[in-house]
Image (cartoon, rainbow, N blue to C red; front, side, top):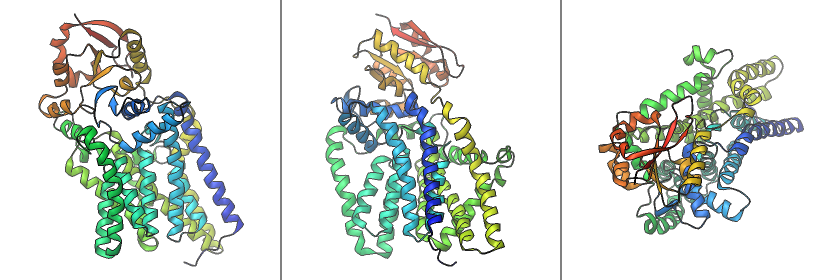
Length: 494
């Protein structure tokens, strides 16, 4: 294919596409910033950040310090942001950081594509696709997902620039954002050993620089450098209710892909969806023209296999790495068509333009339609109003030293100052050690909490606690979420 010449038209068109993508992201995330009904698990991380910002240390409202968040780096960033911008709540910082990381990640994809030789217009199209596809991300704004994707692309960019020291630093930060980032470091390390050994030493040095700093803080504080959440989710995998990683994640990915299309075509014909066609074309185009970019799909496959091996209880957001890489691969197919249309002459150009319009419409219609018609009404986590009412009551009627036990502790920890008994073991290693053998009841029996949040929706996990609740009396009733039975706050009898 001949080299494409940049013209004012292609440059201005690229700018317009990028601005449109930014507007879509800001429009769709505005309700989240206003309402802050974030995913409950977001608030687990933000509870640690809240206490750090307040000077209480890396604790879940009360000592001891525990590493009960998957993302130490995002926790520290939110705490620092709230400390130096006191006019912002920690949740404000988290949401703004997520949105900013989303926009910057799209910009990094653009510069990565330019670095491997792609022209401005197709690179802008591929980058903007990440901004047009919004549905998958909105429930997880306020989590570390987009910080991870930003650092993933930054690592790729630095690797393309052949800066091994910076690559090592970035990989270590990626691993502190989510542990699976270490897999990318392993892949790049193997590449340096096989192809460019002179770069191995600075790469390892950069990684050690960040890792040793983290170890110097984490080991005296927690006695470990690995988040407790991994052990908790591996323990949960032994329970009858668990969903194995390889059972849930491919199913979730196929279900997500099936939602694309016009008129319900994707739902009725999931394996004939245009997304698979674009993914195959995008991978082929990567292999033909932009081979270094294959680092992303190879990392995604490595992530899938590694998590299948350690087999944690699968959560909904585990599929998002695969969704992101799928988005990038599909966007490469659209970029390929843009390159062809720019290089073609006469009737072939119009054929390429027609193909772009049809495929882009099939690929983007669902998300763009959602952005225009529904995003402004996005209400966030359906549990929010129930859990806000719960924490309002606790702040008014209990003291900070009184303990509260529940299985979902995000809102509970963030919006109250109570001592939290985490029945799922995410933030308490002592509970985690008993999850596989004793289920979710051990924490209740061990800590004898002052209050227990009785939610019939979780009887499948906590039904064996019913006889022990005779020692508790009802204090307050809250309307259940998602049309579920009411939730009761029970207080231990004196």
